[in-house]
Image 1 (cartoon, rainbow, N blue to C red):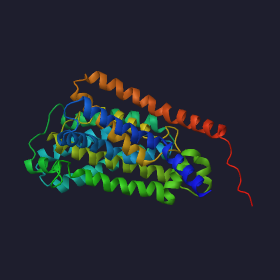
Image 2: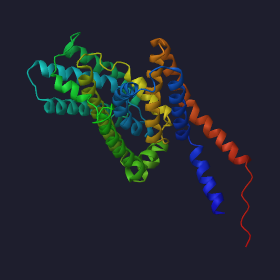
Image 3: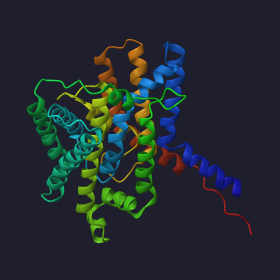
Image 4: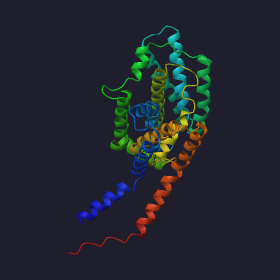
Length: 337
């Protein structure tokens, strides 16, 4: 009986979407290392890490937002606007990096709060609201800097932002991402707040009747998404040593693709951070490996779009197949007394 319970537990883990993503990641790495020169090198993984850091930073709060049944498509525009504000403040003579970071985070939180107010106070669909603010915030970024680029930051800022962990080639910023992932993971999977988020995604009205403050929770999730997008904007500016209005343009597609490919339901109420993190690394590895193989940029966009479709359809199909398999499996006989 004990062995049967252990086998059932193993099957429940192996049969999950998270496990499928981890297997896919291993296969992509293995095939890439064999067929594409450079994939197995430390330099390759340094570039993968640098690319996935801003996506991972934004995907962490985005996961919680989507689980509640909402979405935020303005994240890349918030990133771009905070980049331009940092650049303009630098031009005005503010040369303290902590001050610039603090202003960027406050601005990101404010922009996220604007989204939150429209969604929670006015009851507007988050899809429509954030499509609007996507255009609004990107337009404001061009108002702030126009077509100019601010690129005269001190070298110690830019090299420090992408500096490696001593003895490794991996940027130290990945430690910040890992700590934040643990914090968001604990909130989502080990606290009453996380259980409330799933309840909201499944049935917001029922969650409200159980005493959960749906509007207030969603509002603060949008604030967190804005602040994390701003943090990604700080990293983006320092990594490329350039503040431009088009920084991060189109990044929202990569973030949404990672969240949905990670097993989070677009309808809310299902998903977790482990799958999302695996999807972020999988997409980053695949993209960089294909670039090393000289795959055209248009093809990469097609692949990303295709994976986005798979991410919506795949978990549902997998769930249906798993349910059918369970129904066809003969029932475990009861132990004889």
